[in-house]
Image 1 (cartoon, rainbow, N blue to C red):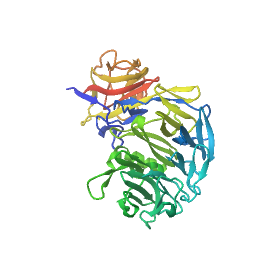
Image 2 (image 1 turned 90 degrees about the vertical axis):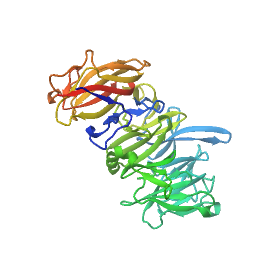
Image 3 (image 1 turned 180 degrees about the vertical axis):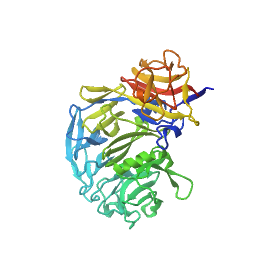
Image 4 (image 1 turned 60 degrees about the horizontal axis):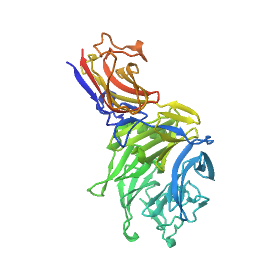
Length: 496
């Protein structure tokens, strides 16, 4: 008796179990796809074009938007850090601004100033013209953030404390000027390494080689009423870039994976939710052991957090949609994408090659001026197996239901079990802008197979209308610059 298999990819990539033990709505792999915030459909990511005419000497390690007012005139710049230098984008070229103490500083915009924590003699400020060190600011700062109209920073020279500037001032830090020096878990032997905000609370992360803490500091009302509580004795961000405030929660990456803090109505008002990152926990733990830098960046136009692990042989670029979960991106030339930011409604990517990219709707990645590769993407579903060891036969009537975004081709492929021995069932051509269609997987209906797929056919890339195997794992692979939004794949199988 035939059994319908309906695969609707709404749950993201799940690496918490084997491909046979994830849900029908999850993915065993999802490369160069994301959940479009406008439709919530799993879609091939947009391509990108090269913005800069030449590459920087080193990879682009940090990107940010710097906007504000210079007198009565607004300004807006894209800034980057590469090989220990700060740059400003001027047309299609980078303009060097300053030499920094760190190749991966934390940077925020505050009162039309770019504030830089780079482990130097103090925080640095850039006003669009010059960079200066802020007198009286914390020494050797690695983390900085805005909270309640103040700047908050740490100091590697005084690791137990965090420091607040005077209200609405970036350059006043002493007690006489309205600044504050406040201990967080004083004497616990841990170092303050990151900040986030949750409503009126400042979340302070502290860690050492074997201990972690998250503190909550209430900054409501007068300073005499401020108080500090321990939120978690088992969690902390892995660094200043690995913690991010978003909506009604704080997301962070620590050595246990991806988690969040969120408000509750129980004691302490805040709870840790580690289940949100459960599907990628084992992968992220592995990345954390090896990565040299880890970052979280919210990209509004993607409706997603970007989780980047780089260094130590890693170039992981993962997209987290709060409603659907994780997918992964990679440049068409397989070189690392180091950082991302959004400015003026445009999404910029910094590459390890030293070029700056801007995302566009086409199905190509221009990795250098005039050098473009067709975009590709992979949507691989769960592995369907029998409980009794019998073969699965693919019957007639398999349907692929997609919306076309750009023209090109995509394949419906199937794996026999969990091995890398796929067979192409059918290749489809798309026309940009065409309506949603249901397409059958072969020119003739799929019929019961008389033989199975074995090792001799590994990597076979020809259309087949007959297929059987001990397990079936379907995959959609876009190529030739094709971009699609996947609604579902529906197959009919029976045991024999």
